[in-house]
Every structure is written in C-alpha cells, then in structure tokens.
Amino acid sequence: MKKLIYALFAVLTLASCGSGGETSIESVLSSNDIKAIRTKRATVSTQQKELENQLKQLDSVIDALDSNKNLPLVSVFKVTSSKFNHYLEVQGDVKTRQNVLIYPEVSGTLLKVYVQEGQKVSKGQLLAKIDDGGMGSQLSQLQSQAELAKTTFERQKRLWDQKIGSEIQYLQAKTNYEASSNAVKQLQSQLDKSTMRAPFSGIIDDIIKDQGTVVAPMGQGSEVFRIVNLSNMYIEVDVPESYLGTVTKGKEAIVLFPILGDSIVSKVRQTGNFINPGNRSYTIEIPVSNKNGNIKPNLTAKVKINDYTNENALMIPQGIISENAAGEQYVYITLEANDNIADIKKQIITTGKIDGDFIEVLSGVNAGESLISEGARSVKPGQKVQIQTSK
Image 1: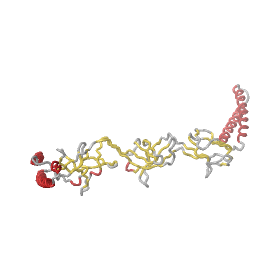
Image 2 (image 1 turned 45 degrees about the vertical axis):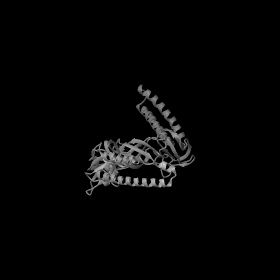
Image 3 (image 1 turned 45 degrees about the horizontal axis):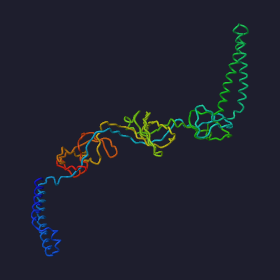
C-alpha cells in the first residue's frame, strides 16, 4: 500500500514539474489575449487527460493488490459479566385484614354518634350509644342489692368465724351475695352492648346510620360504621405453580401503583400452601408500607418479584443471535484482530432468561470475547471480516 502511495505522489510531482516552464494561468488571463488564452486552455485540457489516464492505471493496480477490499464490514459487541436480576411480573390488589363493618349487638334507637367520617380512632374508643331500654336503672337497683348482700355476708362470716350462729345462715348469706354479684355482672354485660366501640385503631371510613335511627343486631343492612386500618396493608397475588421453587418467602418484590405513579420495594411475607386446581397457582402476600395514606384497599398494583439472580451473568443483545435448521442458537465470534481485520468462527450457545432486549448466555461464550453485532447475516464461518471502529 505504501508503494502505491509513493507512486501516486511521484506522478503528481512529475505533472507539477512538467508545467514549471510554462506560462502561468494568471499571467495569461491578465494579458487579455484571447489567442493565448485558448492555447493555454488546450494545453491544460491535454494535461488533464494524461492525469486521468494515470489515475485509472493507479486504481487498477490498487484494486488488484488490495486484498481487504471485499471483506464484510461488521460491528462487534464485547461480552462482559454483570449481576442480573430477573423478575416475574404479576398483578394484584391491595388488601387489609382490618377493614370491617361494625354492627350493633342490641336493638334500639341510636341515641348518640361520637365520631365523624375520616376521624382517626383508637382501639376501644366509644363510637356510639344505643338506647338501653332502662337497663341502666335496673343495674343501679341490682348494684344496691349486691352491696347489701355483700355487707350481710361479711357480717355473717365474721360471726361464723367466731363460732357464733348457724352454718345455714352463713351459707345463705354467701349464696345471696354470689347470686347478686353474678346478676350485676350479667346485666353490666348486657348494658355494655348498648355502646359501640372501635375493635382496633383505624379510620372511620363511613357512618352508615344516622343519629336517631332505630338499629338492630347483625343482619342485612344493619351495619352502622365501616372502620379501616390503612397502616397494615398487603398485596395478594396468584403465582403459577412453576415458580414454586423460585418465588419464596423473603424474595424481593417491586410494587408499582399505576394510578398513583408511585412504587415501593418490599419482600414476600408469606406463600400459600395450597395449589388452586382451577388455575394451577398459589397465593403469596407482600406487605405494603403506607406512610402517607395514599394506598387504599382494592387499589390495583403491578408486582415484579425477583425469581432469579446471577451474580456473574453474560448478557448479549437478542438481535445478534441466529438459529440453524436444527433449532440451535449460534453467534459469530471474532478472533484476534490485526489492523481491524479478524477471522471469525460460528459458536453454538445456550441461553437463559430475558431482560428487555438482552438475553442471558449460559454456555458457548466467555467474558471478554467479541461477537458480531451488525453484519452477521453477510458472513460465513472461517472467513475474514473488517471490524468497523467507532468514531
């Protein structure tokens, strides 16, 4: 190649030297002598034809000597190892075990509602009072009777301890006292049912019955409140049984909420022990933190569960893989390059899981090797290629 360049340089030099003794074009043009100008033009035209012939001869020799002229031009992808996490994508709904309707335990008029919708309440907090039908007055009478029975029993016991009086008097006093105490407890229990209290801490989501409404114990349409706890949320999703060994307790889960435009990172808290025969899947639970309260029950969520991790995965573009008639996948590997000219070889590979446009290679290539990424369709095993360098 260097000899050709030297030859071309020599031709151009000779052409330049050959015209050294001639009148310059500038001086001919400045003379305004049309005859001299035409003569000069004829001379330049002859020189141009001679140079064109010489260039054709040089091109012909270059074509004959350039062995790389017809080599396929390719681009390469260098294989590197990196950590690869694969995720199973499923869809589920947000749930909470503390989302309940509160029913009255006794019939009566709803005398007073002590809370408002959206109000935060604590476990045991009084929510409403129902007319007790006079049980409060009855309780007061029973408590008075119980106090008298207690006093009588205590006095009779002191006498009995001193061996004064009969045993039957002592036993009657004791029985009357215990019966009165039990009656008070029973009526107190009945009276407590006329008050409605929060079964757990949460938010009053809905007040279904208005103050003054007659309510009745549990039945269709008898609910009074809905209380929800938004701090203990979870997502329940069905996972195909084929992932039984890979989607397990403790696996990372990325939860996306399309409506909210938000996502959180969690872990699988629990996996089911039953395979649903209808869809051949099992259920898993993923806890969801809800610090700002934006996540609501029944909100749709997309869940990506980490089912596979390879710390030293070899990932290559899917588009560079071809397949032969036997169904085998293969790529072209470039061997050691010299001046961007390299031999290639066809290599059968086995692939694993997919991540977008890339796929994991399990065998056939090694880290550090270069694979043909563009131009692979125009090459054949054993031939040389020219590697295109990035600018």
